[in-house]
Every structure is written in structure tokens, then in C-alpha cells.
Image (cartoon, rainbow over all chains, first blue to last red; front, side):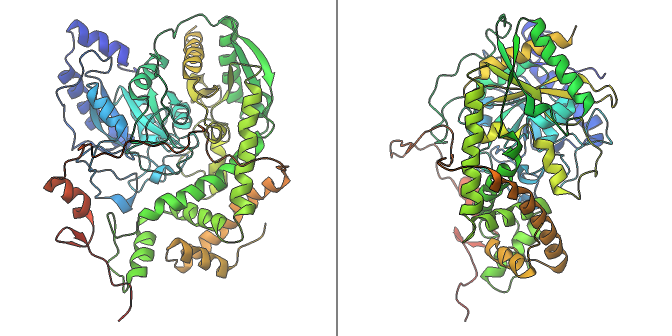
Amino acid sequence: MKNPGFTIATARVGIDSGELTPERLYEHYRKKITADDGAYNAFRNTGEFAFASGGRESSPLAGIPCAIKDNMLIEGTIATSGSKILEHYRSAYDATVVARLKAAGAQILGKTNMDEFAMGSSGENSAYGPVMNPADIQRVPGGSSAGSAAAVAADLCVFALGSDTGGSIRQPAALCGVVGLKPTYGRVSRHGLMAMASSLDQIGPLTKTVHDAALVLTEIAGHDPLDATTVPRDVPDYAEGLDADITGLRVGVPKEYFGEGLSSEVEERVRAGIKALENAGATTVEVSLPHSAYALAVYYIVQPCEVSANLSRYDGIRYGHSTKNAGNLLEVYTKSRAEGFGSEPLRRIMLGTYALSAGYFDAYYLKAQKVRALIARDFTDAFKHCDVIAGPTSPTVAFKLGERSDDPLAMYLSDIYTVPANLAGIPGISVPVGIGRESGLPVGLQLLGPMWGEATILRAARHVEEGMKE
Amino acid sequence: MNMLTDREVDHIAKLSRIELDDALRTRMKKDLSSILGYVEQLEKVDTAGTEPLYQVTGLQNQARSDEHKGTWPMTAELADLLVGQAPHHHDGYVKVKSVKSK
């Protein structure tokens, strides 16, 4: 096992005791990235970033080096979203999450590589080359927040931000062996996040510990007048009460999450994680999420429909790649888009366009949104009998690079357990539960909570983490 | 699994404003048909009497005061980051090819 390096908590102790300075810590990570990232390709751009003085000294994040997924804007710097179409795009302002991290004094090391426009489950769909899993560089790190997960796992930063539309924080966190949290829809502002599927997208942290995830969430959560989908609700200190006793906590175990397709070594570790919760005083109850089997089909209608609308802005006119071979205005659009987008965005734009086109709307989009309501209702019903739901984050450990590239459907199945939370809007966290017996690769346990239930799933995750040390 | 026809794929591409060459048409025809085949399973779900779920927070008509907050003063640098990134621009305007043919 590699040395996990600094957590926010340990770096904080070092800085506060005077043993470390934020400048030296930043320099330490810059050197590590230069030395090690050739093997992982986790970072897209570090050259435009430097240590910045200022920020609230009282924040737990003051002086902590972090990395930001390349679909979030940082004023004056390039943001590609992993796409050739935005190769030279320069951000005009800070995303709200970035502004909040800067105000807290966090130090940005660079932007992380990702599947193009956050579409992908392997980190292989980047126009700037695939990301490799630090646990085994022959394998994928998961996606789409591939670089953020790999950078945290390889200790090339203390923490990172990712975005999660169907599992893009939790799945790579599981495959790389780090913690990844997708907050409740409406908890964290998406202002300055490149829109992909607007009814599903949410920003969250990737960290080395559950405690760190709580610290970052506390800093980035909250209402933002610039994102009308954020909910005006108080933000608690999520790190407080993390170690509180969980005696009597009811853990729902959905039978649908332990069926066909789940690898036995993943199941074994996930069951060990659930056992750790029982050892800490929680009780388990079997729950049912009867419409789970349909979540992926719903997702692959709703998500491409929203993608087809959101990605229509890349037209070769206002910014981004523009073709040199257009004879008329229509060709500016059609050629710029064909030249600039990779195959996954093209596939989803066309799929969404088809599903929304005249004559098909009712059969696809409307039908999918109705089944989505049933999936959300399954969770509401289940949470009458339990406080959190526990299961695997991903059906398998990290797969080999190239293994699923030619079969989009096989790739999509990686997200079968993570997609339902996005459709229902509920929060989810993936926490490491050791390594698989056969592969020796990391396995993640997913904990889901009801809307605004971040504090509860964080506390449960903290106890899983603690139980795994024994 | 029903295969989409070349004509259907070309129609979707036209609506999507994407130029297809032969290789991309073949690939998209195969991939889209396979995904559409997969999502067909939703037909089996009884959704009678179920309202669609378009959003999860229940927020509606989020209004804010209509005032100039001055958050982004329009400096030459900001103007350059906004309009200056257009592939074709002139005097602070974005240039496009003429819509009507001559």
C-alpha cells in the first residue's frame, strides 16, 4: 500500500503547529505531480496555477492544496472539459465552488483530466489521453472524475472536486480506493460548472478520509443566487458529530443491489463493510427498491436528452473549435461539431435528439420521467424502514484499459448502482472497504441517504472507515 | 433489436447539426440501435396514473431582485474573454456567415 500522504486533518496539524508552511506544502505537491503524474495523466493543466496568498485563516481548508475537475471554471485559466472542442477556452469567471475554496484559502494545484464533458465511466474518453488507476496502471480509474480520483489516490493533492451526474464521483472513488461524496441535488451550486445533464449534475469532494469529505462539503455547500436550483437551507458543520454513536441506526440492504452481475469479491468486501456498521451498533433491515432494474434505461434517456440541449451551445460561433472548411452557416455548425466532439458526446447528442424528436417524445422522454418518479418513490418508501441504504458502489473492481471501449452498453453497466441516486436527487457516498480477494484492487461501499441526509451518511461512512482498520 | 435505417440516422444527425461521414454513420447506427433496444424494457413498466418527475427539489419560479449588482465590471479584459474568444469577431461583435445565400 502506498503512503496515503496528507489528509486535510494531518496537513492542518502540521501548518498550525508551524512544522509545515502552506508554501512548502504546495511546493511538495507540485514536485510530486511533476515526478509522478506521467504514469497517471491525472492532471490536465498545472502550468497556469501558483500559490496564492489570502483567504480565511480560520478555515480548515486554509493552505490546503487541492485539484479541480476540468469542467469547472477558474477565472483566466483554460477549461477543456476533456474535449478538443474547448482546447483553448479560457474561463471568464470563477465557478461558485472555486470562489468558495479560494475564499477559504485552499490552494489550487491544477485542473484534472476527465471523460469528455463528464460522459464516461472509465476516464478513457478524454481528448487528452486516458487516465490510469494508481492501484494498477493497466486499469481504468473509473469516470468521469477520473483525474480527480487518481490524483487523490496517488497523493498528488490533498483533496479534489469532481462532479457526479450518474456516479462520476462515487464510481471512480470506489475503483481508486478513495472517498467520494455526491451531495443532495440543490445542496452545492453548479454556477460555473459546464452543464451536462442539468436535472442530475451535482458537485462534490473526493478525499482520503470521510472527515475530509465533511470538511470540504461544509465549505462548498449552500444557497447561491447564481444557481436557481440551490435550496436556501442552513449548512451544518458536517464534520461535527461525525464520530457520534450509531447504535440503533437502521441500515437498509436492498436485495436488488446484490443480484446478477455483482462480482463475488466485491460482494464479500461490501458485506464486510455492512458488518462493520453492525459491529458499531447499527441494525440491518432488508429493503426493496423494485424499480432499480429500470434505472439505467431511464438514465440513458433522460441524460442524453438533457445533453442534446446543453451541448447545442458548442456551435463554432461564440467560442471553442470552429471549422475551417465551412461554405455556409449550416456547415459551420455541422462540421465544427463533428470535428470537435469525441464519439461519446456525439452518440449521446444524437440519442437525445432522437428521443426528443417529433413522434418519439411520449414513448421515450415522458415514459422515462414517469419511471423516474417510481424510482424516487421506491427510495421514499425504503427510507420509512431505514436511515441509510448500503450496497456496492460498482459491480466490479477496476477493469482493464480498453476492455469496454467498443461496447457502450457494457460500459454503461458500470453505473448501475450509482445512477438511481441522481435520478432521485438523494445524496450518496462511496467509502473504501479494502481490496478484493482475487484482484487485489480497491472496493467501495455506497451509502445512500434521504434528501439532505448528508450528515447521516457521513457518520455511517465514518464508522465503516473505522471498522475497516480493525 | 430493430436497426435504425440510414435515412433515420441522417435525419437525427441533421437535427443534431452533426456532419456524418460513412464510418461515423455506420458506427452511430449500430450504437444507437443497441441503446434504443436496451431502453425498450421501460415499455414493461406500468406507469398509469404516475406523474413524470422532472425535478426533485420542488423549487419553482425562483426569483431574485432585478438589480445591477456590479459583480463583473465590464473591463477590456473581460470583454476579450467573452467576445474575444469567438473564432470570428470584429470591433466587439461576433461575426457569422450570412444566413441567406447570395
